[in-house]
Figure 1 (spheres, rainbow, N blue to C red):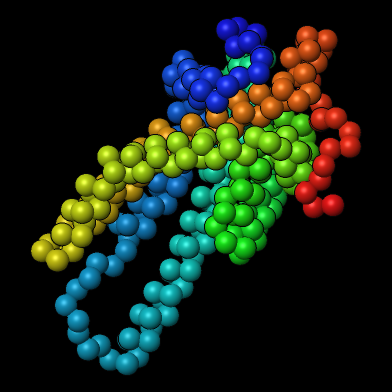
Figure 2 (cartoon, helix red, strand yellow):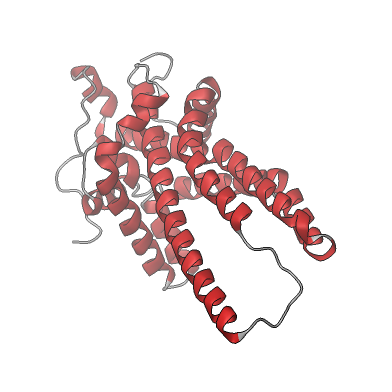
Length: 289
C-alpha cells in the first residue's frame, strides 16, 4: 500500500496526508480538476466576448427596442442554462475523478487522469442525485439558523466517497455519511474552514486584482472591460484548479480514516487484498428514516 499505512489518524495527520498526496501527485489531481473546468472557462470566455458592452444610451424605435429586448432575454436564458449544465458536469467529473484517484492510491495502485475521469461516466446520475440531495438537506437545515446548517454539512461531508466507493444511492450515501461522521463533526468543520481560507486566499491572489481593474475600466475605458473580465475568468479558473482538489482529497482521506476507526477497514483490506469496498456494519443510525 505504498507509504500510506491505514491507521487511525489525528486531524493534523489527516491534513498532512492530504497535502502530501496532493504534492506527490500534483499533475494527476490538477489534471483531473483542470480538464472538466476547461469547459466552464470556455463557456465563460465565450459569454464574455459575445456580451454587449455598455454604450451611450440612445432612443431606438419602439419596435427595435422590443426586438433587442426579446433577443437579449433569449440569449441570456440560453447562456445561463448552458452554463449551469457545463458547470455541474465539470463539478461531477472533477469530484468523482479525484475520489477514485485517492482510492487507487490508498490501495497501492496507479491511476491516470483519463481512467479516473472515465470511471465517473457511469456514476453521473447517482452522483448528481447525491449532490442535489446533499444541497437540499443543508439548505433545509439552514432554515433553522446557521449553526444547524453547518452541522448538517459537516455530517454529510463524506457522502460523495460513500456513494462512489460503496456504490450507494443518493439517500443511502447521505445516511452512510451521517453514520460515519458521528462524534467527528468537529474535524469536518475544520476541514471546511481550511478549505474556505485557501479558496479566499487564492481568489485574492488570482482574481481580485483583475476584478478591481475591471471595475475601474467600466468607468474610464469601457472597451477594455471585456479584457479584464476575461482575465478575471482565467484567474478564477486557475484558483479553482489549484484549490478545489484539496477539499475532495481531504474528504476521501477523512472517509478512509473513519472506516478504519469504526469498522477496522485496514483489517478488512488485509483479508480482501483485491480492495473491494463493502458498505458498513448493519444497523447504523439513519438520518432520514
